[in-house]
Amino acid sequence: MDILILSIFAIVVVLSFVEDYMPSWQKIPILIGICICMVCIAGFKPLSTTDARTYEYYYYFNYNPIIELATEPTYIYLSRLFVSFGWKVGAIFLAYAIMAIPMKLVILWKTTPYIFTALIVYVGIYYPLHDIVQIRCGVAVGFLLWAMIPLAKRHYFKATVLTICAILFHYSSVAFLPLLVVGNMRIGKYWKYLLASAVPICLALYVMGFSAVSFIPNSLVEGKLDLYRDMSETGNLDEYVPYKQIPFFAEFILLYFFIFFYETIEKYCVYAPILIKILVLELACMIMFAEIPVLGARLHELFGMFNVIAYTCCLYCIKPRYVARIGITLFCFAFYLHQMLYHLYFH
Image (cartoon, rainbow, N blue to C red; front, side):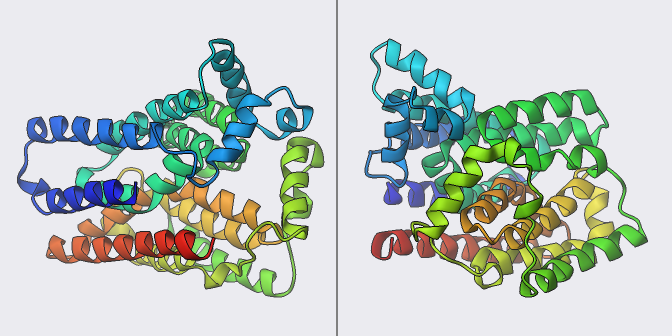
């Protein structure tokens, strides 16, 4: 599987360096071919893949009250439907891949002119994470990306409906709700000061031992929180310090790059006000929910897909563009190799 993903990664890297000279009619059939390949890889993954056995257990024992409490209703009801047809667990892997991957590729096509540069980040970082491993999150992220489009146009009802759809696929999507209120507000001087200081303040609070977990109502996601807390206390989750993680450093740099070049980025990207707030939110979640490591990581990873668009904004500010593309490629390739080797030898 890693060879197949790296092959797609290599293809989109090459295409990214010539996409400025390609008309849309040439890009679309290539994207369709890439989409089919990605759906097949994710949909027909082996059960040896990370979390696949867990999904298999949830699939066949979906009437277990603990599983019903901790798992989103969409997965439960789809599992019951597919099991009633006599289909094996691979059916739900394929169904989620068909829902998630085309949706995200269409949205990326609509939100950035640098589609193949965006695919470097998507294939190198978020495709293995969301569409191979965290399949429920993969679909939820697609709906949240979709919600960003009407939100930027102040179509709040449509954005809210799409956010609710995301929540039905992954409960952590409730963290997107505050953005429905402040997401598309223009970034003025005071907003920039607030955004620039938010992450350092969160780091200071984290060092002093403050956690935001206690502010989550138990009735909201009780099953999930209890499960995550038990896993943390029994040592079944990897311990981590947020600011020692590779994604944290990369996104920290990306955030301040965004703040410094915000006026330039805003001229070309109508989603800039939303993207910069999401960058702050995902870093803050990683820090403030670190008491339960998997919760902080899940919230951070949920919003990470928006970075695919954010990274392409570097092309508006760095000239010549191939310098930015080389930097993005090297980072994503290094990140993929790190994740691959970590899971191969240490997980």
